[in-house]
Amino acid sequence: MKWRKKVLKIVLQILLLTLVGGYFASSLIESTFATNVSKSPDVIVTINSEGKISQEGNLFEGQLYPARVKDAEKGMGGISGIIRIRNNFKDIKVENMAIGITGMEIQNGYSKGEVLNSFLKFINLKIEKGLVLVFDKTLVNYESLENILYEKGNDKYKGFTLEEKDRFDIPKNSTIDLKYTLHMVPEAGDELEAVTAYMPIYINLMENITDDNGNGDDDDDKDDDDDDVKDRDRDRDRDDEVEILQELIPEGALNKEDHFQYIQGYPDGTVRPGGLITREEVAAVFYRLLDSEYRASIWTQTEDFPDVDSNRWSLRHIATLANGSIVEGYPDGNFKPGNYITRAELATIASKFDKLAPSTSNKFSDIEGHWAINYINSAAIKGWVNGYPDYTFKPDQYITRAEFVTLVNNVLEREVHKENILAEAKEFPDLLEDMWYYEDMVEATNSHHYLRLEDNSELWTEIYYPELDL
Image 1 (cartoon, rainbow, N blue to C red):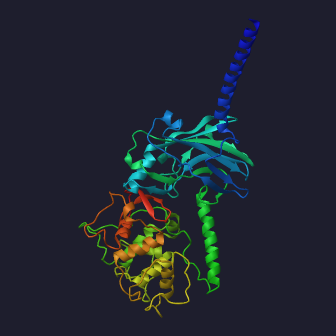
Image 2 (image 1 turned 135 degrees about the vertical axis):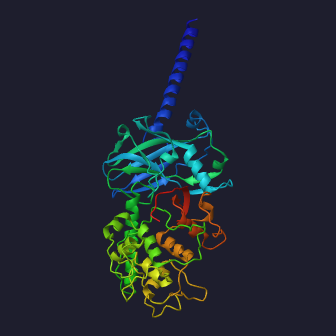
């Protein structure tokens, strides 16, 4: 009898140890999800010793479909993972977090604009931070992606600012893990099926940290650094050929970020792409496209052209651009504001906004000896202007409105393809989709917010109607 009691006691002890061990093992498995030595991270953000940021991994990796929050958190319909931030720079403070969206591929027949709008509206993100072993602090609590998206130059998408109590430090030479969960709300439709995208995570740091590959916080600094490198490389290449010509207009004089409408239609509802454009109309367009601070620095209503009266509608446009050496008059002292502008004159104005690209040979057969030869060649090298099938440029020919907006869009780096134009874009009876200038005319006649795609073209996200001085 005693031996039976002894056996029973041993069995109960084993059972108790099994239950307790299982409990601790289960707890340990769950809690180590928050540690720096846990599962392999899904996204790694590294800040190197020079302060440059690089990233590996993709937040949007896995199967995401409509589900309840509690199911998504269990992995049924949701995407969860670990973001690991390695800081090898110096003590930093995180006060803003954001995501980006690039490389979106759609295989369901819906337009990119429709899919993107639903993507931003119906997908939510949660980000949690832990202490020791457990993720117990919510930084971002299932915010829709449209409230977290960062897009350079777009005031609508500036990321998510953490509350003061949620901001956190990352000491130098330390690593921190964050847990994230993507959740698609049940209201999402079929347009979000068969969609893939690259979704980086951005962190907004107090220190001046640069982004090594476009996947970090300081996007503006990254672009500036890249531009400096490109300029140095370009200048070195030019030094091997000819002397670099002096830049006339400060870099950044044009506003390339805000894509607002810069031409309009006529009272009869047409836009007349084949019509001509006058010198004062061109001055007015470039006046509007100037960076606001630069425009203010050269603004004036005083000019010396005898044919520009003080009550002329384009006075401030012409006077301001002349004051900035962007436009010039003729040898007789007149500006001839009502004259149609020629292809050479427009190429000259456009080329003043960037360093002239030197050329050892002419790009067209009919510009040798022309007063604008350097400007025309430079604009051609940069891809801003094209010639005709017979290899001529026809420099003294008047330029059409379609040719004008095409050149301006090239200078501003504004490009949209038909499939990425929103349905509510303005329509004109004389602007047909099968014409070569259709996309450029639509780009110029609609104010719009956009995302920049990998091929540098635009995906329109919204058409808006600001008050413009047209």
